[in-house]
Length: 364
Image (cartoon, rainbow, N blue to C red):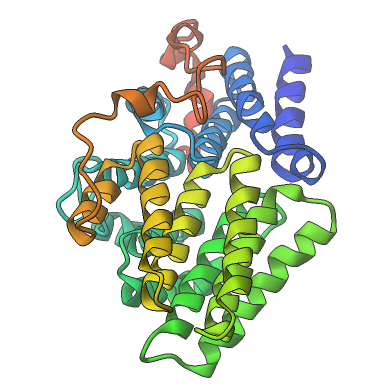
């Protein structure tokens, strides 16, 4: 009915632009799934496709277990193919390939060429068709994967390209927070590096200030991101002189991330703290403790590719042979939340929505 269709659209807009200013962003995950289901029920396929992409982005952003969402993503792709939602399909492919790389499927985890997509081919097509959302999605994933797997040179390169696309499509959605965050992290990493430039420091400050502005407006969902960037900046400014102050900054960031359920961000903060303390001061045990905690958090997330890389880099870590325990972890478990239900799409026949295909499904 028209009432349900309008309600679904209202839910989508409210949770995309408003809810995060006052409520935990985790609360929006199930609402996005509900908006998707209502869109499918009423025949509003374009908004349903947009809602399911928001659901996936939110799930990933919140650091919930990767094995669960990977089971659903292939089903989402089938539906988007059937309903010819091309842009939405490409966005899902980008996120799925990103997750598979993190989960350990790819030998080169920073490369988006894999079982689900060919990164370079999709990039060229998106540029040709001027699909800015797809271009931004590819560059954000390249930036994130490069940073996650400690290829900071590539992370900065992709971050600089991402800025160009990002500035053309910037909006108020909370999903921008992760873009601000990983741009900031990448420029801080460049600021730390041997080839640092003044522009890296300036750009890092820009994204710290963007997140600070959101936090001052009441968006508590960005607090942990802001604190991680501040801790990283403090580690540069303090060096080996104020180790206790730097430790406090990292601990505040880690605590903030864990408190609100962003365990993947807590893992990143622990790793950065561990790297810092293993390279500064005489207490290497402190750094090892942070690295070990980071390893545990990555395991809980299902980031087997990352834990393998860490176990090769740090001899004091033992490679986990199974992720069974982490998948059942109560800390980041997805049990009890709404999951994909095939019955929703089975209520429809693709042929009954021919009118929605006139534009080739270019909106997402």
